[in-house]
Length: 243
Image (cartoon, rainbow, N blue to C red; front, side, top):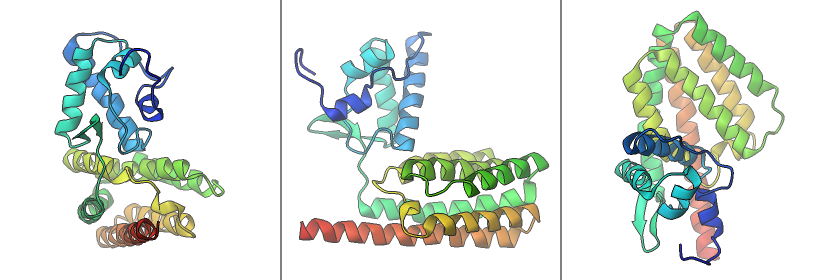
């Protein structure tokens, strides 16, 4: 960014005042930590698709030189979280086909992890899952961001209950690509209540160690989310044409 040029809104999102800083501990360690922070912000949608990732602005934000920032951006590009554009590196913008492909893969993985959770869950896992169900039941018409974060936490608890680190890693990586969409499926009419009921049925199957039921509920739950996403994408495409 040239000296004396006001930062754009998109640049400000990538380099927010007061945002996380990284303590120095070697360039490689700094690069890893910066990548971890940015990856989480992409996962949660704090850094929206198309946001420019400027080395100078990020170096100022994290209080480091441009070298570890460059290393961090290289890691994120390797993970397909950043794209090269005419403006430089930007947060990856997924097309409709890619979004639906991610859903299809996640349906398979969520079915598998739910079945494994039913067979491997411990009492501590059940306590966490019951607590999350209770918390979500007390939320009355929460904003979209809260719906996204609580849903991510619930599914993360299911993954943990599987006690399968390979599946957990695959789902965490895939989930980064899934959440970077403009609107959550949980924001559509009645879906929040519907999803909470499906979550409760899934926890019940896991508690009863009913592997077949857990797999069936998880597949239906994610298939429903995919169908809603497909409808949202179709509506957005129609609006672009009419616009």
